Image (cartoon, rainbow, N blue to C red; front, side, top):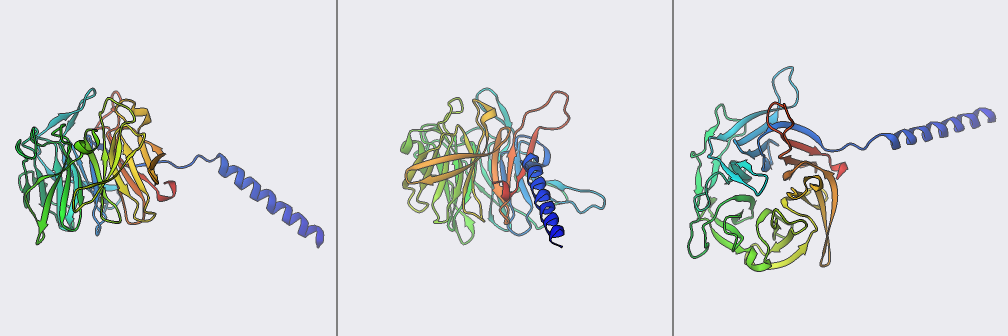
Length: 348
């Protein structure tokens, strides 16, 4: 009996060791592509009730949702809004762009920050949306509310354009803009009785930090605005993280990040950790998803995953991250190179 017990224990230990060894050899799972054929996707928002994905790309705003047709897997898609104009953005390479950022005013209204028109004529549109995808996409000019344009004047030397990031607080919509390089505006539309008001200059970020281009924007647990100051696209490691009082527009904190071009920012609803996407224009191989950790006056960036020209980031209720990428077109490939990736919460 004793010999049998010892043999069994030895066998158990051997099997356990073998299993551990096998796990060590197994490659760690990485980002998983859940949608492709996206045309320079730059914004993403996940509906809090339906879980549908709303993605802004060059051709319009797509809705991605669970496939219901028998025998088919993955996600179905439909254009929520299309027929936007088209513009070009960048400094070698250049990219075709349309609507840039998306967010929710409430469960029935989608905010679209546009980049498809020339500066000083671009708009922010707010569309009424349903619980299911529309049979036909809405036309670009069918918005329930239209904000802007912000023309040259007292608040903007050149007029505003390239409306990018969207963040909503209890009383206002906030939009980042790259149109006026002398100011670096975050624009604001005050919400009254559920309706957005005039779009006006709120925070001139470049005047505060002497670095260009507010792009990413989100709201932290205390209600402050957290902004990714992209910097110059042809300069490495110049992106800043800024924290502003959402009521007064006063700069509270600024951090160097060591990242080159912060395009997206989002907090995990499960862990509360902050994550950023770095497009990294000067060296795309260094782009990816990063966790940003703030300790005192220092911000540290930890690379979570390498991605090919990542842009927007959003989290679902379970804490899984979803990141859009421009990608790189392969010779002879059909379709567009843009993708939507899922990074499971356990990989973050």
